[in-house]
Length: 227
Image (cartoon, rainbow, N blue to C red; front, side, top):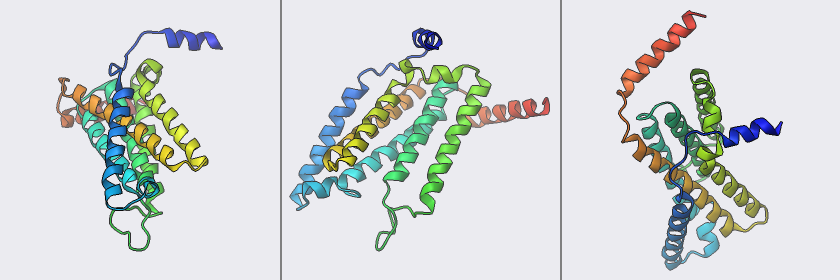
């Protein structure tokens, strides 16, 4: 049982090259949160109000996730195969968290909010896109998924999961500042991942998106016709 897993862990393959992403994200998160605390403290808000649900810190988180989704989608449109799958995964995860972080529409809040009806729909659509992308990726590139989830490449997402798990633990013990701080940190890692993917995509020489979409549709049609 353990032998195949150890063999997989020792296998060579793609590597995530932005090694200090965890440190850069930590520095940026601390600076932004401290800056937000200083600004909103000056206008009379308490620390708990600043870090509370639907407060300024959560607004920063939403902005971070929106930037992540946008850059990841742009990166996916300019990359191929494994890099595209990683970018799509990053985009879908950020959209799911963005929807979760948006305030629920109620009372006078009708502009920047999401209804209870649309919230699960948005999350479901993003999850479905990710599922379809995963199935198509593995179908067209057998063994590609095992390379994509290898810790050598996917460790930033694993690190984000661990950070967000700690934030849920902080929420359980009602430590609001720590909870929101950890969430901000996890989301910032996603943002820096998207920035790195976007920068990487600009170095790639790929055909225009329309040309690649037509080619993919043709291959899919041929596959279906031969079955």
